[in-house]
Amino acid sequence: MIQPSLRTFPVLILGGGTAGISVAARLVKALPAGSVAVVDPSAHHDYQPLWTLVGGGDARREATRRRQADVIPKGVTWIQQAVTEVRPDEREVTLASGERLRYEQLVVALGIQLDWDKVDGLREALGTEGVCSNYSWDTVESTWRAIQGFRGGAAHFTHPNTPIKCGGAPQKIMYLAAEYWQKHRPAQPYDVRFRIASPKIFAVERYAKTLLEVVARHGIDVVYQRDLVALRPRSREAVYKDLATGAEVIEPYAMIHVTPPMSAPDVLKQSPLAASTGWVEVDKATLQHVRYPDVFALGDCSNLPTSKTGAAIRKQAPTAATNVLDVRAGRAPSAVYDGYTSCPLVTGYGKLVLAEFDYDGRAQETFPFDQSKERRSMYWLKKHLLPTLYWSGMLKGRA
Image 1: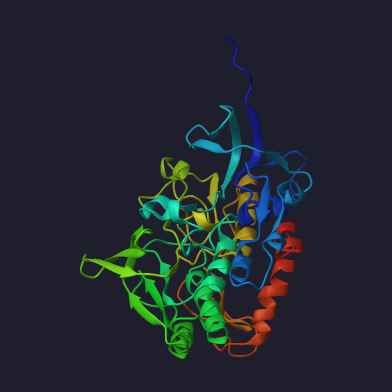
Image 2: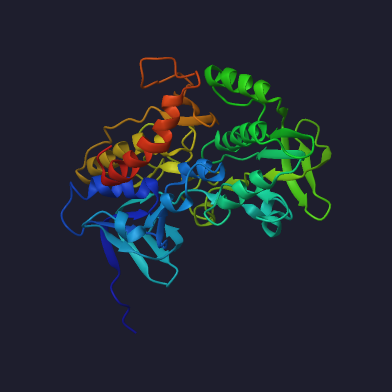
């Protein structure tokens, strides 16, 4: 039986999220028509950084979503399927339909996987009985309902023992909730608890100092190296592992906001592209794969040693696009990414610390004032300006 010829693309991009679309928008301007294809099954594209404010009741969920068809750059071929296998030795990928695609250069931008089931009992409890999470479109509105409906007791906020997208997000919603409850006192006594698997509240001391002041202001009980492993919703108990001792710790909760464990997508863990950690193994400066020179990766699925944020992708995308074009032209990659990332740390309604730093934790701040301080102007930047920059700048290859 004669096999049909495989579709081949000069540049194939896996993933139509922030990273994939940002790179596609740059490459399509520099290559002949029909050169770039994006593989992504999603019908919608979400601006997830705003979900913190949705969970805090200060933004509408609908404002964070657009049709995927509307953000695919003009001239890019959109293949609306999931990837099931990546075979870089053959320069092929397999789709859920069974179709195989070939490529000359591959850009991997498949994002991060939410591992809800790694916390026993979490998936079934989400959105009910005080269990909420900002980390998905389907659950983000449950957070605001839980905050408004809180009547007292222990309110938990968790940060898992895995890399996560936007490392500051688990505590941002906590600060909004704590401020809301100070103004709208619950009927019964209450306390706010932050259970974080890391040994520090934030990796960069310059910004950690301010966050500890916010914690003190709200009287939040912080326990480090405490990882959520199970929920018992019937008895409203959270089961934690003490990472320092290995002991199991059980605490009651009236409300719990859970940041789920996360990992590289399974399809990448199972591919030759993965490092031992499961993330795609790339050079941290050029974003080129360390074993497959025609493969590049960026964003949350990569093993780049920086925070997994949209702001990091804003700097990674031009590096990846330039270096793909260099390789296509027979040149060595010329663009360098220095690890820049940013985390707009919401510390209350109208308050934000704009953390910006590089691989070495050195501040790379944009504005001529001390960004380690809480500022109302930076809150409005996050709420109003950054979404516009995202939709009209980053996804258009202009920023």
